[in-house]
Image (cartoon, rainbow, N blue to C red):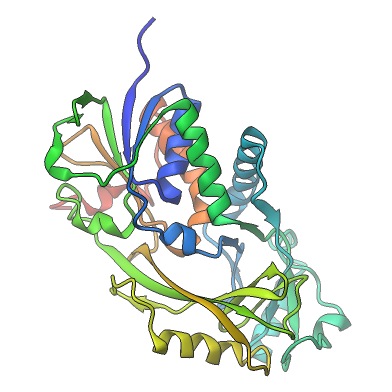
Length: 348
């Protein structure tokens, strides 16, 4: 009987832990290395919304992502005896009459019925906030509590694999040897820090800084999340996470007064209230110019792989894409051409 593959996964954010879990499920000997200093996955709201509001369309591959994320997160909850995943009552506050008309046009379309609740008088007359054009309720929206999820998965990986709590040093990677151990493959799941990766520098990672606030509000409803110009996520005890700003190509984790002011200004389109700001955080998402992740193998170093660039939809995309990545890497299945980094190979 052959020994299991040994794979080093670099990065213990959302992408890294999902890849590690999927590889462990295939019997791989996994080592996860990260010092936990890049905490962008912790700062994320963890909201999974199936619709693209600005065009009132479905998100990319959402019909596949939704059942996969339900299965993945609930299975991790059972396996770790933890609770971090739940359905999210989500209401879109329409920005224009045209947006409302688009909803009405699509709400009975077979392709949208699992995501759109047909409008009722109560949606038009919803009075818990500023509501000029009415609102629509989204089905199959979910939320993950990021810190609980990441802590649970890291404990699981520690039980079944190995975790190195240290910063990864590129200079110490000699072919497939690192810190005295040999591996069959190296998988880089580094988020925006992948910009510094000497082997995958050809990938056009677009870092996007986002700032979020935690506030206390007397007016926001605690039984559902509202969305218009910003999101707000109820956290209990009249506390809400709200955001986020979008700052392209900024890799500073410093919070700014400009970011805070922008979020509060956007919130003013939902409620008229002087809220109490409890905390202010910033994180950096790894995006791509074509809005598709970076997944695949280095064109020359065939044991070096990348899983990155999931952007703001990471918590929705990661369960299925990490499964497809492990199916491709371990079982030789096909990888979706839309995510394969072959599209960025030098000379293509």
